[in-house]
Image (cartoon, rainbow, N blue to C red; front, side, top):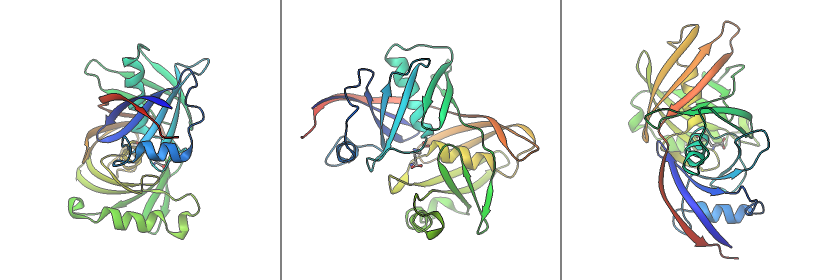
Length: 262
Ligand SMILES: N[C@H](CCC[C@H](N)C(=O)O)C(=O)O
């Protein structure tokens, strides 16, 4: 099978994107997707996305982790897919697309920064002195010091595979508070089974629980190993969070054509 693919990255979280508006790639297998995402035997990426037709929306987003399995929502992937749609001639003031966790709005500003509206967050749970919440994907958040020297992979893997989160597992984020409204985040991602240079739904989760939040509108700047993002949201008196926007760069890296082995 001939594969015209496009490689995009959002603050270092990188993806293989396929234009599937003609449905040509509807039957890709888990092993084929896993092969495509392999950084040595394939194209390489943290995940793969299909841009699908969807009546009533600008497009549908289908997301697969590097392990080849369809996944929950990918925030950086959603931002990259909007930039890909723009490059493919789908130009909107406000994009409206569907993903596994429901509808999303998105905008591209005059600097090419992509703003993606995330789902509302209803609750934050306290687990073993840390925090757990879902921003379209499930996230565990532990605050640490000296994060750049922290063993993210082994500590992250321990929590991700712990009994508490069987059978689906969870993404694990480590946060260091830099200033009142800036945090540093490193993430061990489920389905990639490694640290990624940033994780959009993870960054969103960490910003939301940043303890300097006041009620009403908040903006948190988030530094990651892959670059800087910002998260805007309203903190509501009932403990929920709404009007949540993940904002940051999303760029095309290269495109190419490969022939998939049978
Ligand atoms: N690995 C995540 C999905 C991708 C999340 C991440 N790439 C993002 O930008 O949100 C999971 O299995 O829940």
